[in-house]
Image (cartoon, rainbow, N blue to C red; front, side, top):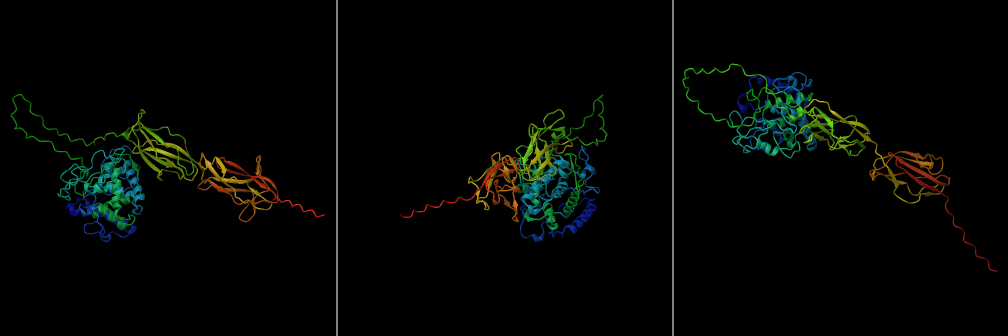
Length: 573
């Protein structure tokens, strides 16, 4: 990067030295350092595979655009968040925090990469570190509920004047510049890289580099290409250097990565701290609004001698400009006063089943008006293995035009009992709304034999057929339902019988009650063999399940029928 720009921030030497110490510590604790080529790019040992951006000679995802060189503060990474404070430079209380929607985007992207590329081991803190260095976390979290930045984030045009020379590749579609390319969005992709790296991170059907969800997911996939394992220091270094080919950039990103790994906290959108120092020795922000043509300037007319009696023009005001930062326009999130239940029915399900009802929450102003386009976070709280569909315990949903957000369907695990689903507003510190959900044990409401063969046995013998039943609940298979089988005295006396048919345990001992039984995946329960003692008569086996299903099965013990002898022939007279 230093070679690209030909100059460095004068106070950057000190920050680079501190960053180098952080990198040295990381390398000592996590593994060997990377062996990079002369341009600080991919490790020389990774083979001949070449990324599209490297083949094009664009210098990484950003085209080696400038970046923020500020290092993490020395204080704890998890101070108490400052609520409602607008973004400003040098605010160490908010510098450690990450704006809520931006943080949500990083974690969502990392979660998706865990499924798509599990071998990459991408930490969300790496996305946060790069987002901090590239755009100051989307200019302190200046994003709406969908993750779109409130204004375009653009780097300087890459015209070769102190920067890399990258002529226009997108006809100005992303950066508004049809002559040269500019890095775009909170993760600062150049258009030629975005053309192949783009992702739709928020599911709106678009791939927008100025959307933090799209940009974060694209950055995650970019860092995980080439089969890199980011849990190893060498691959981690290679991935970061592929984003921007600069050792100073690597040092700075690693410093923020280590800082965020120690802990951070969520702050409201728009209240993040803006870094102050850039790698191109320009103390202005890296991000600039979309370029607009300068207004035409007409030459000033020749001064005229004032007429008699005409007052002399007043000298220009010497009052210094106001130092008060401009107020940030209110977002829909700012207007939310409270959350209301939007008609959620009772949340109950049996273990292993999907909940038929879903949590529904409405965002409202103080006057009770609906607030659309607000991001609601649903979090499962408590000792439970229940999840949302897809296996996540956290889900974020944007409110619709009526202010309502409906959480994904809940999936019950095997742990029974109650837990809580908590709804909160992303980027707003107001009380959450709790919903109680209950997971009941698996149950059956009907039992039926799978055969209609009569069950008979001779005294001292064994029954030829084992008892088999099928359990259902509301007509559906009731799998993994607990059951008990008892040989009872009669339909009116359910106490265990002390004579007649019996089961045997593993030691061959007579047993007339079986507990700990369970139906299989098809709802079927097959009992062990039944034996008979010397008592004859009609007996009863009762099978019961969780949920109240019960079935009485008749057993008959009778002596074997003997055939009558044939009459003898009469002797001849």
